[in-house]
Length: 441
Image (cartoon, rainbow, N blue to C red; front, side, top):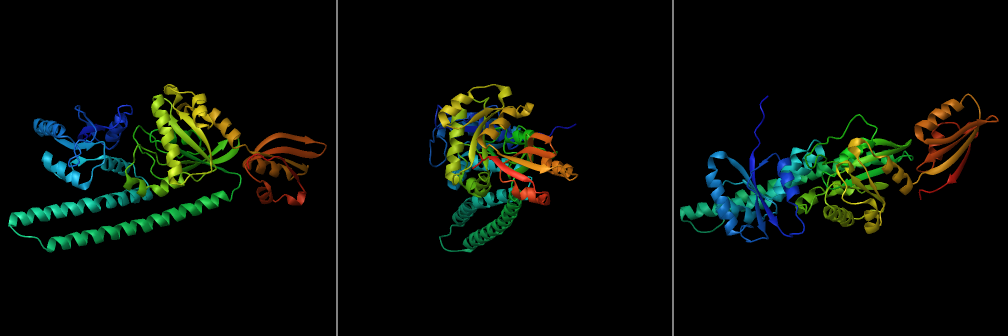
């Protein structure tokens, strides 16, 4: 079987803070975008030039590398920071390479997003982000091209056909953006309607799973869900770009688990704007599970958890209850749940979804969002059998008994059971229903 050759990228990691090295995430993004990293990795300390983003020394080294490896086809120069359109053009000229070969953090992440866009919504959001990005960049390219042509022709300034080309491009771009935004609004409205219909079923707990990309969110949802349709998981970043919801059961108590788009360090503004509503939807839930990879360093775990909590507040906050989930404990533990509890004043649990070790999390969910306990009593009759079948489908049942011609059971439910009992059409049997403990409010 022929193995497809991956394009080669030269990575330039710009160091802003020696105590916080995100180069592994950066190199992971390059790999997820479909590139093979060149053995030579450049590290530059700080932003050396507002014109190029890179220092003259780094540019000279890059030029030499490109000259030496000219026949080996280096496909891209990838920077860990975001470039302005002017910097992108300036760097292309300084390195004497074709347009689009210099890739910044925005373009890199967008390439990863596009590679993992499997739904109509995620593809549209990628299109929207690219159009917003292309607008100033292509305007500058057209202006630059006009200037070069005018200079070559020995002409002078003035409004000519080149300006008209720019106007046409800008109008077309904005019209396309408006069309995509309308489509996204329809998709979001449709999903909101589906969510409301699901919420009519009062005995389902809505759980949103949040966290950085590659924190094990999708694996956790798959482990807890009762679905044969698994959410795709692999070592790449951003395998989930649209909310993915699956049904699950917590010891007989039903729930909906929603996997959300992953966070990333310093997500570029245009991408954040394009995926804002997707991030907002992640906050819609009775309970938020905040996932962090426990196998990472302690400093990274603390930093990422602070960033997730800060992002939740910046997006608009959420009154939902929260649990910190320390994932991948089978790969090693660098921080304890007690340390997390002490620092963030939040309940915390360590799990290994890959080995289905999630029972501690299920128990913690039932502590944080404790179900109500109801008692039902009803005279024995042939219809009690169908009633029992209904109860076991809808609720968790405990302390069931038949005594002195009376069927009795305790029902665990997230919310009020009366509307669901009415659905069973047994009110003519005059069941006695009593709330024993009300703990979910």
